[in-house]
Length: 193
Image (tube, rainbow, N blue to C red):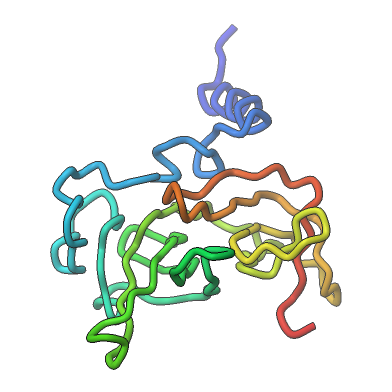
């Protein structure tokens, strides 16, 4: 009996997805791109021009996005109690496709000039189905708002409280990565509702 490779991959992917490790929906190091693999990034982060042709944008520093990049959506937040620092989770269209970036927001010139952002982690976004939306910074986890959570939700017409979550991640500012989350207990709300 001849086995279709696509069906075999789909079956393997479905099993791996249940375990949280398949394709762009996975939490593998490749899809999360936890940290720059370039040891040269230990000092000052790279400029947009320096990352052209690289496999990762982690470490890129910018004041405004370079040509070929566009901002789609995002949310800013502080790290937490007693810890200094502002962060952003941004959905960005890049020359390599749509991505989520975890960024630090750093003041320039003593805070008098526009802040710079530094990409600390990236996550390649899977394509969204026609009934899906990406929610950033407006999801509750077990009844508590968590601005670091990003979720792919089913956008039912006329519904502002979204409970059908297909995939979710949390930005981990300390480790510099996006962690895959179980979807149970996550509810997202339309901003402004």
